[in-house]
Amino acid sequence: MLVLFGVLIIIASVILGLIVLIQNPKGGGLSGSLSGIGSQLMGVKQSTDVLEKGTWVFAAIVAILCLVSPAFIPKDGGSSANDDLLKNAPVNTPQQKAPPVAPMPGAVQPTPGAPTPVAPTPTPGGN
Image (cartoon, rainbow, N blue to C red; front, side, top):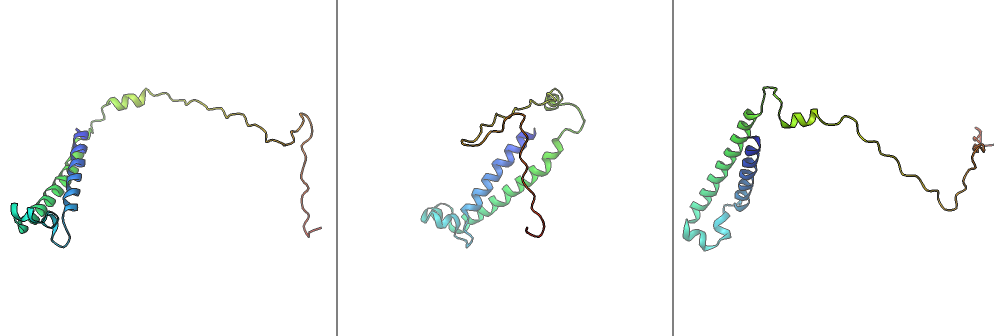
């Protein structure tokens, strides 16, 4: 049921966005972009009224769907298909082994068993 509400909210939001994009902030809107066609069919004043009413209707639809949809979230604590998947999931994760690192060309390789060289520590005072 939540998926249905989600799809309806997305569809109503897209339609609301399109209605808002069609409107002109200075009042021209649909009638200005369609030139004479808008005024011949509905009249200039009426086309902006339809778009404004559509904006309010779809905004109300989105708001109502968003407020009603949480009522359909299951609260009984019963297990769903997703809960069963989580309970039966393997606990341990496979360990990835690091690939062997190839030595840089020209680098001196230490011989096994040889002591590692220690860098001299600087003395305070600069000498």
